[in-house]
Length: 228
Image 1 (cartoon, rainbow, N blue to C red):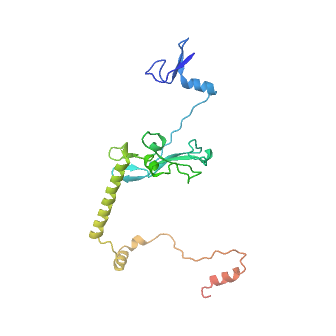
Image 2 (tube, rainbow, N blue to C red; image 1 turned 180 degrees about the horizontal axis):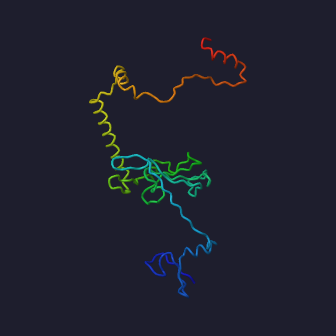
Image 3 (cartoon, rainbow, N blue to C red; image 1 turned 90 degrees about the horizontal axis):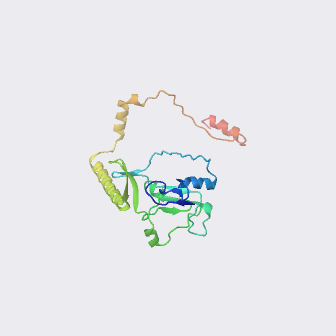
C-alpha cells in the first residue's frame, strides 16, 4: 500500500512523494501520475520566452498600460450564454504577473472574447469589490520588481500631470517659439548646402485608368497635351 504525503520537511515522506508501507520504497508522486496516464516515456520540454517590457513611466515606476493572459477555452463561465469555446481573458494594469498568479485580495478584469457584452460583475458594489487594488511595476531607481497599491500609482500620476503642465507653462512664457518667414529664408540662405540632395528629383503627374475605359484614348491625348 502506498501512502502519499502532502506536507513534510524532507526524507522519503516529504511532500509530493509516496512511501510503500510494506517495502519502505519511496518515490516521486509525479512518477505515479505519469505511470497511470501512460506518460512514462514521455519527454517533458520547457520553453523560455523573453520579451521586452513596453509601457509608460509614472514617477520612478515603469509598467505596461495593460497586460494579461488569454485562454482559448473558458472553464469559468459566469453566464449560461457563454460557451466553453468563447475563451476567457484575464487583464490587469501593470506587469502581467498579477493576471497569471491568482491572488486572494486582488482581482483582474475578466471577459470572454466570444461574449464581450456579458460582464462578470454587474452591480456597482461587485465591481468595486472585485477590482484591482495592487499593481506590479518596475522600480527604475532600484531596478527591482515591486508591488504597489493602485492608489499610490494614481497619486504619482497626478503629480506627474501637474509637473508637466507647470513646465509647459514656464516654457511657453520664457521661450519664443514663433519663427517668421524672414528668419526661415535667412536660415535657408545661410545653410543651402544642407538642403542639397545627391539624388535625382522627378516631378510627374498620373491618372490611373483601366484600358477598357471607352474614353481611354481621348483622356490619354489630353493628359499629354497640357493645353487641352
